[in-house]
Image (cartoon, rainbow, N blue to C red; front, side):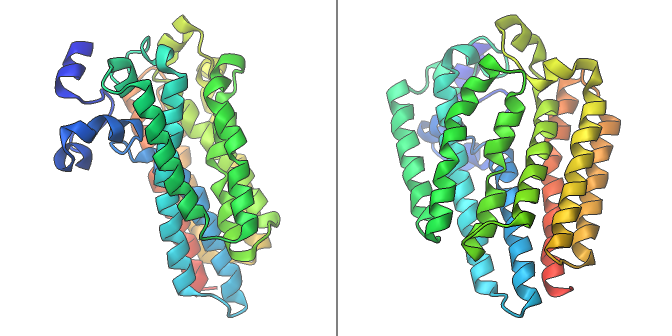
Length: 317
C-alpha cells in the first residue's frame, strides 16, 4: 500500500479532487499535505468557534447601533487566514512529533514525513513560515487579543503528546481548537466576558464529540501501538457520552446568546445545528470507519447553521 502512495504522491484519506492536486505542482504537494490544505475540514472546524464569537460580538454592538460591517467582514477574513495558517503549522508540528506513530497506522502512513517525501528539516522550516503568517494576521488586532492568542500556544504544544499520557486527548484538542471563541470576542471588545467564555466551553464539548467520532476510525491501530483516545475509552458507550457533550454544548450556547441579548434567529440557527448533531448520534455506527469520517465531516454544516443564525440576528434582533 505504501508504495502506491509514494508513486502518486497523495495521502490515503484526502479527497482526490482537491484543488491541491488540480492546481499546485507536484513538488508542492507534500507541503500542502503537511498543512492539510487537501483536507480543509481542519481549518473549518478551527474557524467556526471564532466566527461564532465574532458574530455574537457584532450582534451585541448592533443592539447599541455600533455595528461596523467593514470591521466584521475584515475580522472574518483575518480569522480565516489565521485559521488556515495556524492549523497548518499545528498539523506540521503534530506530524513531526508523531513521525514514528504515523508510520505504524494505516491511515497516516502515507503522510509526507513517514513516506519520506519531506525531511524533518524541511517540515520545521515550513512551520516557521506558517507561524510568521499567523503572527502577521495577529498583529492586526488589539494588544489583549494578541497576548490572548499567543497564550494558546502552550496548549497547542502539549496536544500531540496528550495521546501518550491521557485517555482524553480530545479534551486537550478542544482546549486548543476552541480558543477562537475567546479571540473573536476580544478582537471587538479588547476583553473577555461571560458569553465568550460560555461559547468557548461549549466549543470544547463540541470538539470532544466530533473528534471522538473521528478517532473510532483508528481505534484498532491505536490499541496495538498504545495510543489513547476517548473513542477507546468510551467504546460501546460512545453514544450516551455524545448525548451528554452535545446536549450541554447546546444549553451553554443558548445561555450565551441569551446573556448577549441576541434575537431569535441565533436560537433558530442553534436549533438547526443541534438537530444535525443529534442526527449524527442516531446514525453513528462506531464499527464503520467510513461512516465515522462522513459524520465527522458533517460538523462543518453544524458550524454553518449556527453562524448563519448569528449573522441574521445582527440585523433582526
